[in-house]
Structure formats: C-alpha cells, structure tokens
Length: 125
Image 1 (cartoon, helix red, strand yellow):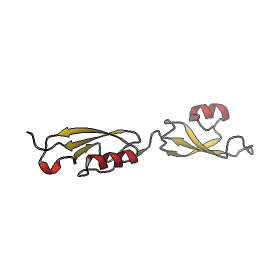
Image 2 (cartoon, one colour):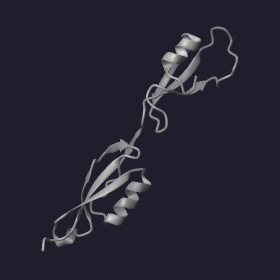
Image 3 (spheres, rainbow, N blue to C red):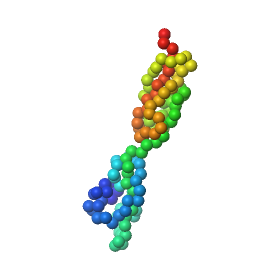
Image 4 (cartoon, rainbow, N blue to C red):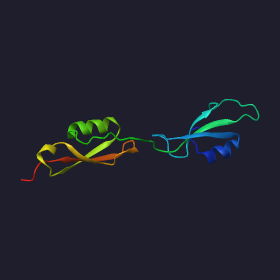
C-alpha cells in the first residue's frame, strides 16, 4: 500500500487497516501512504489490521535567523539549512554595509523555499 492514497488502499484491501499517524514528508505528496506495518507482501492472519503512516505533504523546517550576518555567511547558513536565498540591496547606514538588515520569511517554511535577504549597500552617494 505504500506510495498509494488511502482511498486506493481501501479499494484494494477494504478497511482492514488503521491510520496510525500523519507526518510531513519532503518527497511524498499529501495523502500518500509512506509506511505500513506489516511490510508489503506479508501474509496476514484474518482479522489482523495493517497500520499506516500518511504524508501531510512537504514538511516545514525552521529558517535560520540571519539578521546582522554578512551576505556571504547568511547565504551559506540558508543554503545549508535547505533554502534558496535571494538578495535585495537597500541604501543603509555605513555600519550596515554588506550585512543582512531583514529577511523574509522568518520562522518556518518548506524545504527548498526561497528566503529573501535585504542587505545594506551603505549610504546613498
């Protein structure tokens, strides 16, 4: 039943299974069975139920807070965490030149999401 939806699994085996839990998955879409016990191909005694774990879709993970970091360090931290950073530059005080002033989003996001960082370009000339 793995890699099938609950509806298709019910068509194949009826209601002889129980939904144990839902879990985020970076590689399986929402509603797909990602684990079952006993494993596929195991003969079951009559009346024995199959336990399944169903994907809730893409999992979210914490986004590193990179405010105040240099642009290079911020990009490394975000990429290492699984995000795709993009950079926008904004006129700023001299002390902010080359440093992250803002980021969006913050908190959590799906793996491979874009995280925008705003980097100070220094005073206007």
